[in-house]
Length: 388
Ligand SMILES: Cc1ncc(COP(=O)(O)O)c(C=O)c1O
Image (tube, rainbow, N blue to C red):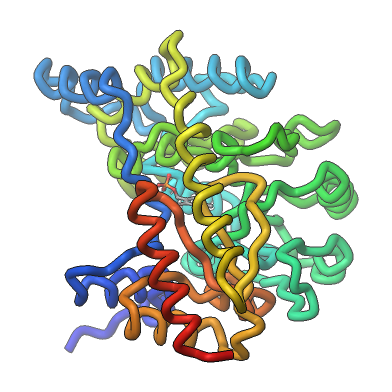
């Protein structure tokens, strides 16, 4: 028997994946677990990937990614967010945002360094930090029941070993866009304690109702201490293409590029060409996304709000809905397991995202309206069977 590492032994399969896997046993399941939309990328994006394959553009690229793609990413962030990063040494193309996050952490953390992760949080952050031999410090205040974390809790978690704070706005699982006030508070803390902010911006493309969103990197004194991570997965529905990117100070990016040689070498080349088409086209290929998901959001919110014993607030952004299950008196794990068993609907227990979410379950409304309606019908049936 081969001994496996402490890091690997310490990794837990997330409840998200666990429920997704359990859901597979039912042919008629309604699966609301993963944030993987059924919408296809624009035809031109697919054509660009196919053309790259046909033309033999299927070899390795530079470790940092094609310079043409990095230039396109530069133009895109400048156009959309007014932020400028040098393609040669301030932009790294990665294998999805996941690898971008991991390489960024690996580039900055030493063993024992602490990284603050405020709950509710994206579940993979903690394990990625641990994979760098660093310490994830989860700021999880069970008193906080409204899905918005508090600045004072973050401030209280800072120690001399703190290196970074990870933020995700708009956020998975909550769909919350952090207030400008909170972001300014985080920026002030980062400056005061000389910390890095890792800003996961993968959902900035999916904000509803003109809610204001701004990258923390655009705040005074923050560009030099922020590492932005983004990807094409959600914005262009390209999850399986595995293209992400990181924008940040050159010392971090050049270190990431060195690490990349030893991790993935580069992001898949046909996908890089597809990304040039997606981000560089004059036509906005993601423009229908907000309309599609607004309709789905309205459908699920209305449906859940009509069920006795459940409640929810419409998310500001993303394709996730947190549903308050307090009135059932069940833990989020019990609720999710019972729901799956009874009516074959798979959701993610809120505890996945922190103790402060144990009175919630998360629904990813990534599928078409009829699918969502059927899910709501079954959840209603389940709730009635509890006879609260
Ligand atoms: C907050 C957040 N960050 C990063 C990712 C990873 O995205 P990618 O597909 O680009 O690796 C996800 C995927 O669900 C996510 O929700």
